[in-house]
Every structure is written in structure tokens, then in C-alpha cells.
Image (cartoon, rainbow, N blue to C red):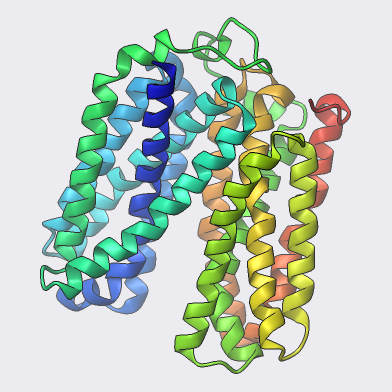
Length: 395
């Protein structure tokens, strides 16, 4: 039964990734139907992001009251409903309203499942599960492309993903008895499962936890670096290497491939190396990748640089999450992971558009310098977390 529950969690992470790429792949067509400018996609994505921040911050209270299984099931259902409502929207203001449950559902799934996996599964599963998120995020543009090129329109693409989410939510509700029956932590987390019975922590109390603020800044910086690189790699290659827009878009996707493949590989590396070692190795690769893309006008090195940055990013996010119960205690892990997710979403939301302003008004070639600032701060904050929590003795 435990294996069946793990399979459901894997499917949940694929489902979590599916909606994330839909708006970007559909908006060039959607905006014509809504008579909206290209920039209006930012309004929708910002609302979705704010919804994920809110639900992430509420995850500790909700999970301790209702349990991970029910929170996940309701969150997936909420996302499915939002996707269906997107598919029948006829006015832009409708998208603005429906983006609210879209974000709330996604944040609830992310924070609750990440904590459950950190408590109950070994490190390899955390990496592979985040790899599954990448699979979902990579598949959804193909679903949308199939719907649009097949003549059904972008509405059908959203409908297909909504149906997938509905099927998953039904499975999650049917599996609710398994979540408590199969709750058996791995050897790094001892009984009892205090994270599901303790009183929820207030936000001000969470920030008082030793090393918490540094951990949240670390998450903010990591996602700022990741999302800025993912979004602006093609613009950088056009400016730095002089490649065409078509080639730049094709090459920039290699960053996404690097991070997804890297997480698959990282799952096996966790069998031999601990989370701290893998995080530092990933940070080293990110630095090497940044150096590669700085080298002037060598296309092969720039391409390799973005792949290496993606590979370096791969272990950082899942390994820090997996370390959370060890560093801060399992009774505080849901609260910590909820704020970690919120910090990550804020970084994802703020950093890319800020760089866009820099690229527009100064130069697109400042990308390495921009992400280097977040990289340096991320490294420093991670070392502070390790030192403040257990003097670096991570098992």
C-alpha cells in the first residue's frame, strides 16, 4: 500500500507541473481572443503567484487541522476547477478572477506534499519527485500545441489538463485512508508525527526560529536565479551571441532540460552523498555555468553554460527542502516549508521582471552579473543556515 501511495504522490507532482507552463504557451493565441496586449500575461501570472504565496503561508495551519491527504486532494480539485473555468472564459476579467483559485490550489499542493515527502521519504524521492514536476511542466506545452494546431483552440488545451487534474483529484480522495495508514517516516525522522498534531506556528514565531530567516532568503535567491535564467536565457543569447530568435528559443530550452535531467541523476547521487554535499556541488556547477556564459561570443560555451547552470540548480531546491525536518525539527517542518515555498514564489515573481527592466534600459548582457548577485547571496545564506542549526553536521 505504501508503494501505491508513493505512486500517487509522483502523479501529484506531475500534475503540479502541468498548469505551470500552460499560460506561457497559450497566451500568444489567448490574447488575440481577449484583445489584450502581450504584457497582460504578467497580470495573470502575478495573481497566480500571489495565490500560491497565500496558500503556502496557510499550509501549516491547514495541514495540521485536516492532514496532508485532504489538503492535497482539495488543492488539486481547486486547481482543476480553475483550469476548467479558464477553458470557458470569454473575457479577460474572468481570467483575473479565476487566477485566484488557480494559485491557491497550486501553493497548497506544493507546500503540503513537499513537507510530507521530507518527513516520510528518503532524499532520492524528493529529487525524483521534483523531476516529475519538470516532466509535467514540459508536457503541458505539447498538450496546448496539440489543441491549438488541431483546431480545437487554447480552450481545449486547458480543458484537457483540467480533466487530468479531475481524475487525479478523484484518485486522491479515494486514497485518503492510505495517508495515515502508510505514514511511516524513514530513518531520519522519528515517531511520533508531531508536524501533524502540534499547534500551528504564527509567522512571527517562524521567523524567530534559529536560521529561519537565512533559509527563506536562500530560497528567494535560488528561485530568483532559476526563473530569471529560464526566462531570459534566449534574450541573453540574442544579445551576447548574436543568434536568431528561433535558435535562441531552441537553445534556451536546454536549461530546462538540464535541471530536469539533473534531478533525475541527483536521485541516484543521494544514495551515496548527503544533502549538504549535493547542494554545494550544485552551487559549484552553477558558478562554472555562469563563467561559461560570460566568455564572449562562443556559442558552444554559452549553450553549455546554460545546461551546466540547469544541472547545478537541480539538487539545490529538493535537497534544502529534504533537510528541513533535520535542521529545524519535524514539529516545525510544515511551517518552515510553507514559508520556504512562499519565499520561492516571491523570488520567482519579482526577480525576472526586474531584470527585464535592466535589460530594456541598460543591456541584456548583464544577465551573468545579475544572477551572480543572487548566487552569492544564496551560497552565504545556505552556509549560515547550516552553521546556525547544527554546526554543519547533516546526516
